[in-house]
Image (cartoon, rainbow, N blue to C red; front, side, top):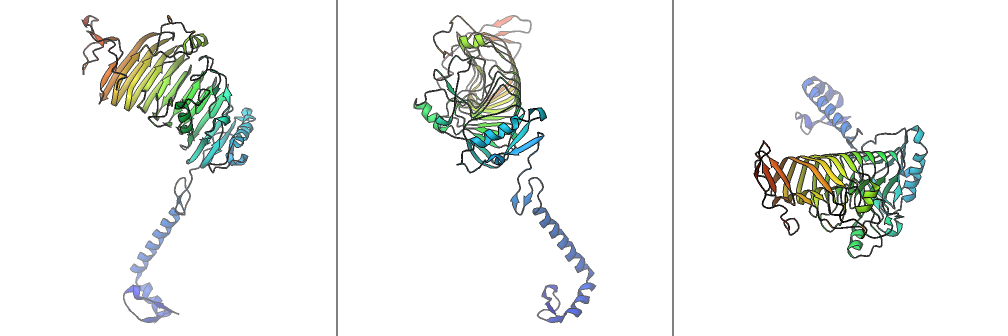
Length: 461
């Protein structure tokens, strides 16, 4: 047998007997060692590229991240006939999956995994003790034909549908009277396909109030983490009269214009809630804390209280980064907002009420807030005159007190604050808003404000 040895650089264009070639090759032990080392290195490199370990390349492709098992029993949506082609309607698959998990409550519940794909569905309900897990590149896609969306009674603290009298559309993902609900994933997406809803709303072609993207009512122990919510028909995430809620690591998106009322998160008569590490850029308030509307909210009597909001980046070109109200008739108290960045927005933080709301807003603390390219930094407005009907009491005035702002920073802010009445104690740098009375450390009045409630500056931009 003859081999070509030109690569050794010794016997160019010559043919050698195999037996003569081998001894010469072996005697060059340095060359042998080098070739073996290179071969071993290349073998390890190829092995690494073709090994599945979490998200490492598999045959040149990125492998799917393994789905953590968070419940005693786990199902895939495909187990119930789901097809993620963006065309097939998967409502029955979701319903069958939820139904199977509803039977496992005494065993710790179950997990419904949504694999990568586009899973078109009409609205469906959750159950207690469920984990809905959205894999990376999984999209739950709302059908945008309203005939598939069920009608529900108006919220009891609102009197009737928020936009139109009578029933309201339900949410895409809904739950009532639940306990222990988790919606999480590897940043999968729930997409409300709100464009058709926004257009019909502007054209006044809808007969009922639009539905939220996710709404959970009268429930407790709710965890929503590591997902993306986008393009809701109406308010995006609406926990209503719930306790013990955690929202963490959630991205909420909608166009910053022409996406009406697409609030990010609206805690409504909720208690003991944490919202942290979220990014929100939407077509209305990034967060709006609520507790019912006029006489109906007063009668319902459920406040929003004990809410911590921290480590957020938010944007709202239409409304405000963080709002309280305007529907706050059940009361809002003990709210902390800290480590917040509001950028490219119309307003930074806002409290909005009106005669007829009643209720109270108190014990509100804003700490370490930064405004970047915000038109108005701080707004407190008491004439937000939208009412459910003519039955409200105009003498029911909101009680607003114990509001504190600490370490507030701004860059590119046109007006630091508007519609504000209060006092500044001690020396402040930079100079505080002219709307505020100034007192020294001994509590003595130094200068009385001459420009309280200067108007128009908030709305005429």
